[in-house]
Image (cartoon, one colour):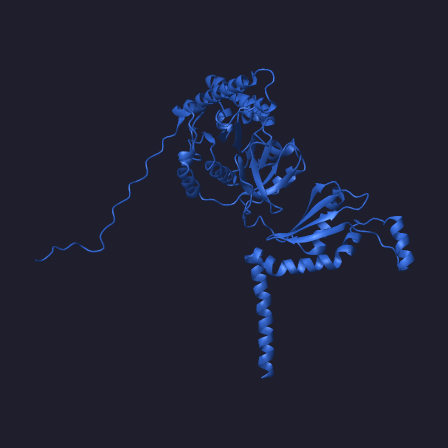
Length: 458
């Protein structure tokens, strides 16, 4: 009987260990909520002061405090760590605010993030500046980019699309009002198309004019034709579409200029320099132009094609330079985008504030996307593994960058979203000649009877 009890106890222990290991590998979110969270909180509470001291994040206490401690307790005065706030558990980690000690700065904590990660047994530690003297530590319990699950409250709004998940478990929001134009680079099967697919599906439910230029004969953007107001599938059609967009931009500037020509004494709120200051009933709908495989617009074989190329590039540059105030935004995608494409490529790239680099085939491609805004992000882009499609490095001209990963959405689901929101497409008469053909939905077949009809016998 004793042997049976021993075997049962050992079997239960092995089953618990095996179940925990399986849960950690297959369902990391569930493992964090049940096991990882309590263990990490216990480690943090029990070793907070000693860990901060070991990481060099403590300072000498004020002189009055040292004298008071010696006078009342006769204990040795220890260095003071940053004051810790309330620990707030989340589904992916922990959040905790710290009040920095005198003489400290957020960079001190950021430099020790890797040591804090090991000390508290979490996947990663990130530091965010809240206000002078206060920072937030975001502890991530597991690799959230392995299986992407977008936050429930991601901050979607007009021209704001939660398109990916950051490595600190926050949503990466594509905000066209803050970052008007963006360059998206990536090699074949890197996830660039998935990023574009999520972006279009998010914008489809908004009153936004969607325009596409897809020089791969439309194979990438044609599934979304029901929601697109215009689509060009080769350089010849693009050469006809771009002047129409430039003319639309000029007309919008005329509308803004007419509003500016108001009489003296007009209230400040009625004076504007972009479409967002216009009254809602006068404001034209924003336009988002998607350019897939931008290199196809630059490649030429004859003198005639070279002249057409120069015209298209000039028009794209004008849209990038002046389009923001008119509510026209660019999303330029490609595998490479450098000076070797031809005249105007570097000038156009300089106007694209946002940069997203998926896996690339060489370091030069990563430098094209990130080298001029965040040189340290180039190595991170080159280290993206092929077995993680959708993983990318996102940056902007402020110099900040982060790793992101796009959630999976099937082409059929994205196309269904576009078909279901086709009625939301604003009417732009100038783009009507470029409206893509949408085949009618197949008629539903009548239901077959369950049994063969038989004549009624009288």
